[in-house]
Length: 124
Image (tube, rainbow, N blue to C red; front, side, top):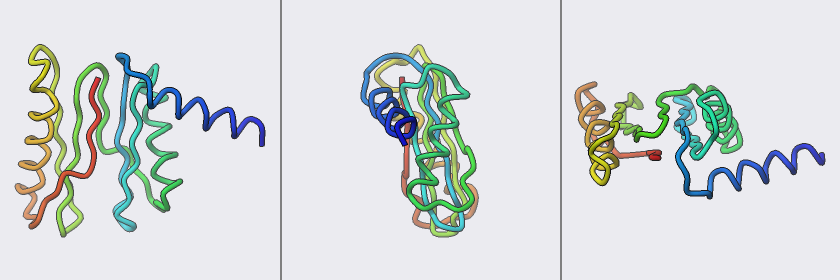
């Protein structure tokens, strides 16, 4: 139990500290649940924490759908539960978040979905 508490505290601290790192987005299609991580020290940790977040929220089939390292990644999902991904890297700085979100929405619309909505994004 003590290890679990320490792990949860480490996740909270890493997810609430503003510094460069890696982030990931996990999605469970059957449950329509999204999990996110950011501020992780490696891609491996980012993916692990996103999967744990997705499962913690009730996801039964969580899969990594997007990840980033010192960039921005976004996921949009429509009513068909198909998703679009967007990713944008430097050097556009202040526009990275917006461009990754626009890319995710465009990708979602291209899959034949209707009513696409941005569900998650991570940036560093």
